[in-house]
Image 1 (cartoon, rainbow, N blue to C red):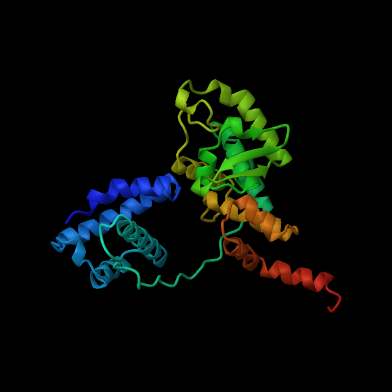
Image 2 (spheres, rainbow, N blue to C red; image 1 turned 30 degrees about the vertical axis):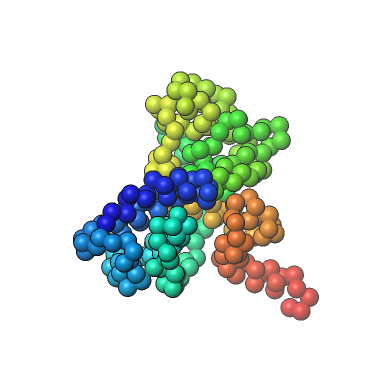
Length: 296
């Protein structure tokens, strides 16, 4: 039996019906290919005979080599895929309906101080393409962007007069984020002075950040830009673009921003995801209570 027969239709379903991002769809396809290989190795031939025991065996094998978080994603992939097959009347019922997700222990995200972020941004300017790199780090931090949102950021979605940028986030959902004064100045200077001299490729004409060949930056390139600047700044921490996003949210909480506003700026669908930043700041919240509460 070859599940790949149904992959293209399933991919179209994810794009058109579920409106999932390209990266999420890639993850789904990768998970299904692993399951397909597992079934082929076992010489499993009939889809109608697929049951929870076979699925559990696959998941047990995966649990030896992947994290609980990845296991959870694989289960989600299989549930979605089998529900799709039921919808298409390929099978009568899903063989994964009674399988639970593994428990995932949430980690407290690394947060940089404003002083550390300033050092990283200043050191980014000392490298080649300094203005671009400095702007990238400032915009990720000041706007709390995901790295994919930064690489897809469009010039036509930057509104300098209103000090706003429009971002296309997960599930192709649009949101507006305010530009800080520093981010606005750097972004304006980069677009007007450096960006206009890079690239003639029509497919990238509206993309803000390009490499020296005039092509869109990859996620890995953004990661390297941030890490190189952090090394230059002598900050001995494992830093990623998401660290800057975590720091953005945490600093807003520390300075009194409400959780709903932060949720909207981060583009979180569920406020529970945003609430983890409250746990990061337990010490700060305790100090605030001691300082300002009438019952000291």
